[in-house]
Length: 240
Image 1: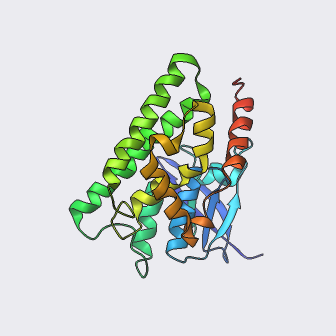
Image 2: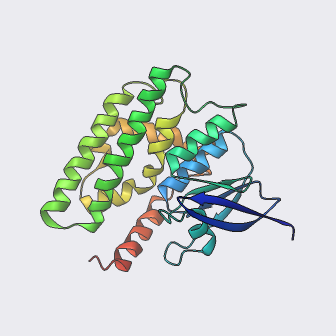
């Protein structure tokens, strides 16, 4: 096996790792991670061949710890031996490096900033409240459910009557949000509400996105399987 030893600097610490030369693009991910799903969708949109290295989040590999020593989380994209971390940063990197197909960001600077704002909104409002649906109980869980629904409604307002957040173009905002479609059943079951009743436009948008091959092969569309994972995660954290 031929390999390449490379080094990189995080702060003042120098680390090195061996990566197989044939694996020019490698994704360290986890099947149920919405953030890893984002990167998979972006890579699929750009038609980029890559090697997927599934990680065990309960027993993190030395490779993951080497590639992301700060957060020690997936996803990590390794391109020509260099790691890029954090899903939204990875998507921007992908769009900048592989410009030949399917732009993921608007061409207008103001529209790009607007797209980044809503992608960041997903990270700051959808994910934290979704996590509290299973991690919290009582009033905190009810507050998280209310905030989650309000956040989806805000996204409905941004979507309007457009097919995608960018109009006719599938892009950053869609990629940031669509992986959470995997967990709609979990949201409904744990939060005791109906996404269809509360946020019908988001549900319709998600179903439309799931018809894209780039999404269907990258996002977990079996929502019951995703729910089973959430139950396993709750058990692992001792949540009853």
